[in-house]
Image (cartoon, rainbow, N blue to C red):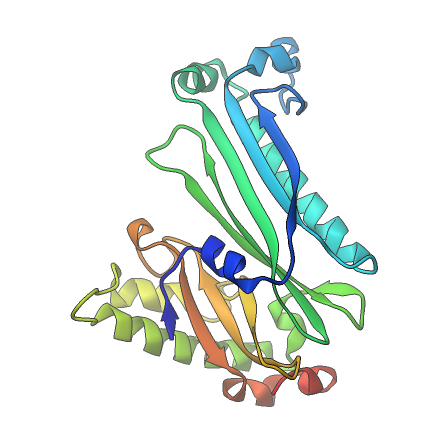
Length: 255
């Protein structure tokens, strides 16, 4: 099933964990500058130029590596955002229309083996529209480490081939929807779902009542498989489509 909704709705509907405010900054009150010049290093130089709203998930005490990974990710996003204010021209534009960074990072799903965290946000730096921030982290509770999609499979190439087959089928079906056709093209879909191009980096877990993974939901940010106006696209791939390619140590985590 193709899901055409904003990721924040999926996170809010999960009901698995709360979030706490990590930072709310108004134009340089509390966040140090990423600039290098003397006038760029003072918070007052950026007063009123931007806002930041960040929320982080509540995680189990033992998930230290997941917490550290999220913290590093947030700091990098903040550094990149603040670096965009390093020129006088950028600050002039931001005085006319303040820039904004917002991220909600929340637990979207968890099983007896994994905790999956989704990032839903945007960065506005004076362009035509905000740039979406769509990301995910999956934590292996047993191993105590964050895993990427390739880490789950003995044959990642074959697994991505299975993902591509199902993703293309669903997206092309949506492209031909008579009531609400997907704002895309077959060429964009083929390119955005091509294996071996880091196209399946962002994913969530389909879970069942037995605390096992029933499949993977791959989330494609705007522009990857459809236009910006279409929003993020999500495709559910059932476990049977890729189970043969899982590493032996992960087979019991899937059904």
